[in-house]
Each structure stands twice: as structure tokens, then as C-alpha cells.
Amino acid sequence: MTTDVTTTDADHDHDHDHDHDHDHGFMNRIRLVNGIAALVATALLIVVLVQVPWTTTVTYNRLAREFGVPVYSLVAIPIVLTITWWRGKTPASAPAPTRPQKILAIAILVPFLVLFLGAQAVLAQAYLQAGGAW
Image 1 (cartoon, helix red, strand yellow):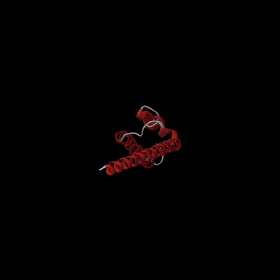
Image 2 (cartoon, rainbow, N blue to C red; image 1 turned 90 degrees about the horizontal axis):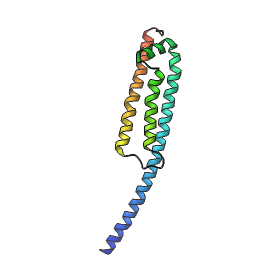
Image 3 (tube, helix red, strand yellow; image 1 turned 120 degrees about the horizontal axis):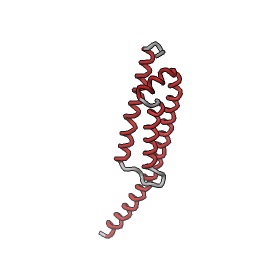
Image 4 (tube, helix red, strand yellow; image 1 turned 180 degrees about the vertical axis):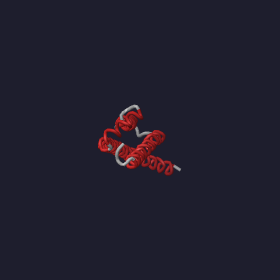
């Protein structure tokens, strides 16, 4: 009986160490995700900054009139807010985010990316259909 209890304690200690290692690895993955998110956001902004002049100032002005704000703002604001929120939830010193927080972050990012890419496709198609000039 006593031997069993000792073994259980040893197993418990081992499990605890394993959990700690897992948390550390998880935090590293969170930092990696943060880095990737920042890179993706930067890439999207670069694409927009390059594409808006490329589709001519007329196209840009039409979009700005239609949405009531510059296209830059439309794209930049959700990206910045999402990354700021994600980083705010997961500073290096804080415990790893809970599953709901991760799901919420993904739920914010995925539809935005889909909408952004969809808008890009629609714009490109409209631009081409108009003979490359609006």
C-alpha cells in the first residue's frame, strides 16, 4: 500500500514537470503565432499600399467615396485591432490564453481574411471587366 502511494507521488511530480514544459512550449508557439500574424498583417498592408495606386487613383477615390473612409483605414484598422488584442491577451509574462480566447482570436481573424481576400478578388474582377480603367 505504502509503495503504491510513493509511486503515485512520483508519477504526479513527473506529470507536473511535463505540464510545465508543455506550457513553455505553448508560449513559444504563441510568440510564433504573434510573429506570423504581424508578418501577415504587414504583407497585407504592403499589398494594399502597392495595389491601390496600381488600380489608379480613380479606383481609390471611388472606393473611398463608396465606403466613406480611405481603403487603407478599412484594411489597417481590423488588422491592428486584432493583433493588438491578441498581444494584449498574451504578453510574455502572462499565462497562456484559454481555449475560448484562442477560438475568439481565430474567429476574428478568419472571417476578416476571407472578406479581405474576397474583396480583393471582386475588385480585381470589376477592374478587369471595366477594361482596366474606371
